[in-house]
Image 1 (tube, helix red, strand yellow):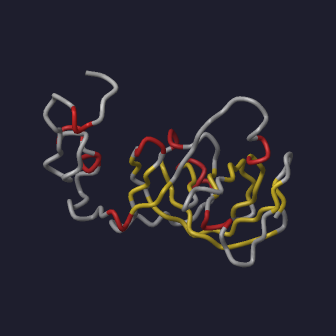
Image 2 (cartoon, rainbow, N blue to C red):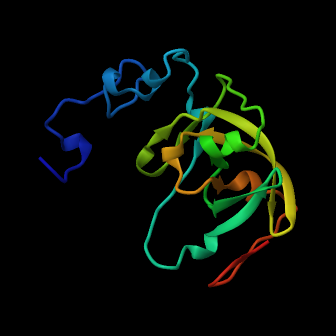
Length: 172
């Protein structure tokens, strides 16, 4: 039966025996992707929301801009709804910084509750329209992002940053 609430579903409930989440089985569990991570590493408290929705047209052009990360220019997507900032792995390697790979990295949850496990964390100086802040940036596999950098709350929600949105641009 299609188009019905889950409580009316005739099929048995699928629950993962690895992470105890509903909707997938052990063979498809995201925790199995990195065998060296213990099963108690992921907790709901250690999750960050990352959302991206693509639309055609020029409505999102104002959210794409060139920024400097450690004085190197990258194309960036400003996401005012993302709780953290992300960078593609190949671009992070261009920065020549230490990518910290520790087991305490959060699980990133995006649109459709898709889960992404960051590869590591870097600390970098990000400059947007002459405003420079040192922030944490999670490094992710290249396929996760369309642009080199997704700039989220770790930059945009700093208390000293004021953002003005107009129909055509974002002004810091």
